[in-house]
Amino acid sequence: MDPIASAGKLASTALFAQSMRMRIVAENMANAQSTGAKPGADPYRRKTISFAEAMDEVTNLPTVRISDVGRDQAPFPVEHMPGNPAANAQGDVKMPNVNMIIEMADMRQASRSYEANLQVIKQSHEMANSLIDLLRGQ
Amino acid sequence: MMVDAVSLSALSGAHALNKPAAASAQDNPVVNFATELAGVVRAGESAALAGVSGQMPMQDVVNQVMTAERTLNVTVAIRDKVVSAYLELSRMQI
Image 1: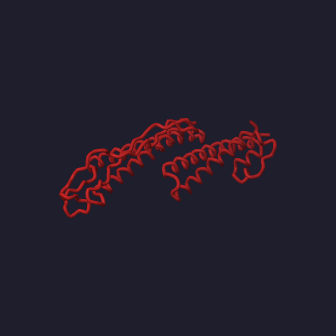
Image 2: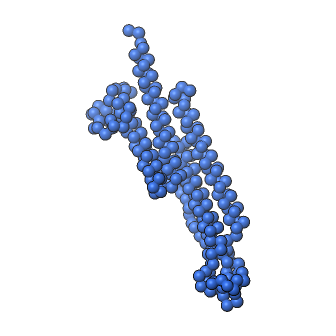
Image 3: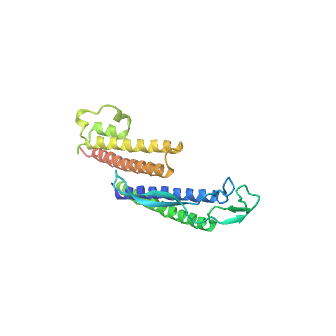
């Protein structure tokens, strides 16, 4: 496969991976206050995402894929909220183990990686176009 | 490589590809190239459609459409070269 086209394809799989990461961050942020339904029930558990190299069988390119969407096993913080439906006998409610600062940092990193891969696509497109322009005698 | 009228008509538009190619044009690289091109452009179009209906991730759609665009650009550049070669021939003093 043409190396410039390969670079574009690789970067597009990376864009997809970073989009999925963004989606997981969005799920965590949206459920940052989601408590359980019954007294003492577990609240939303933070999701994590990890990537792995994946060989494309057709083009033989080392693309990136989502290897696993797991759950963060960190303990739940407990808040005293006797009125909450998820409160136990002592009035304590388990809150999701989502840390907003970590999610913001993760989101920023996903955004930066996305930008970097977008730049790869832009640059490879430019290189291919300037090569084709040679044929046009410009 | 001989460029004859059959292969030129194949280059000029996809409608010529739907007709069964003449026996002499079977192994013609230009005809093969044009068939390949039609396939790539068609893949780009179906990717765009799949993207609009949300069946394909936007990143894949953009990648396929850009591949189609690049292939089309190459073809147009080569066609211009062929046409200008014929123009040069027609300008030859007899």
